[in-house]
Image (cartoon, rainbow, N blue to C red; front, side):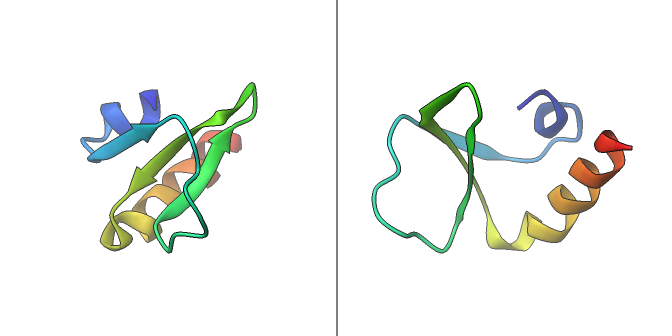
Length: 55
C-alpha cells in the first residue's frame, strides 16, 4: 500500500475477497482476508512498480 500511496495510485482496501473479480490484485501475505483493489487501467503501472521494488 505504501508503494501505491507514494505513486498516487488510487486503491481500495477490502477485508474479504468476494468472488473472482477481474480487479482482484492480491492479498496481503500476512493476512489473507485483506485485499487491495486497483483500477484495470493502473495494472501495468503497478506491475512495473512492484517489479522495481523487488529488485
